[in-house]
Length: 126
Image 1: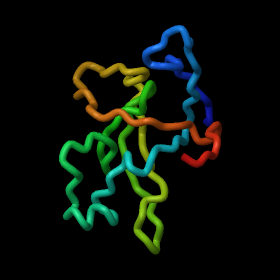
Image 2 (image 1 turned 135 degrees about the horizontal axis):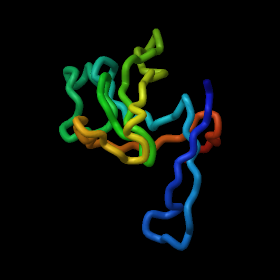
Image 3 (image 1 turned 90 degrees about the vertical axis):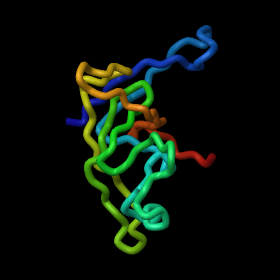
Image 4 (image 1 turned 180 degrees about the vertical axis):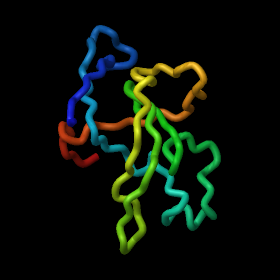
């Protein structure tokens, strides 16, 4: 189903008096394009399929933590047929990693990325 889950986070990382906020989590999330390095896409072609040194964000078949939420793994990439740019990443989440937990036997994920839940996201220009 399309159930929505809530995570709680500080409104400001250093000012506790600002209180907490709820963060909705659902089946579809948006991440920044720069948080995914496409080793098989346009940027991978210019780097011979190697991610930049020290890159700790999402890679094809790689894991990353969604801040305050779960670890996800990129399983599949849907591409624009003309540009070969990724237009959708199909990922699975690891339920045991909720809210920062690393289960026994699982390697700690190094990368943490920001995200928004798609159906509650507000369009904006930055």
